[in-house]
Amino acid sequence: MKRLPVTHSDSSRPKGKLIIIDFGSQYTQLIARRIRELRVYTEIRSCRTPAKKIIDEKPTAIVLSGSPGSINRAGPGISRRIVESGIPVLGICYGMQVIAQLMGGRVRAREEREYGRTEIEVVRKVGVFSRLPKRFVVWMSHGDSVVRVPPGFRILARSKNIPIAAFGSESIYGVQFHPEV
Image (tube, rainbow, N blue to C red; front, side, top):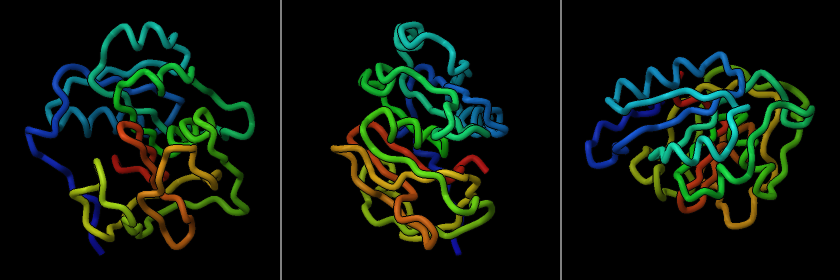
């Protein structure tokens, strides 16, 4: 099985600053490190940082981290303004669930947590998924899953355990897996 490839194309690198919004994930520093390894300037902000402050910084892109919390139990959140700002957004795990909930999708608790390596299948090769292999191995660590994508979003990948492993719209993407691991 193939692992998720790292893209090194200079043309796909954002210029300027990328902001990671941290929901308390154990992987936030690793996300930042992986992005910095691609020579992209990256700063981390708390999810409590006001939306206006983040948007006013004019980041080239925003990454929403995972969280040990549950989106269904009043976990940490952000303003919908961040997702609707026009700035490209990638939600990782809990960050994907935040996007789904803010934009009209549905997230439910799983009967069993999913933890470990699993293979996903790309079902729609568009946007950031256009250069990925059809199948590759990822790291999953979640207790909740998106069960309905928001209006205007499309399912981009699935696994044997979850039908929505990734979704996206024009500039907003969510992945249930951890590409940084």
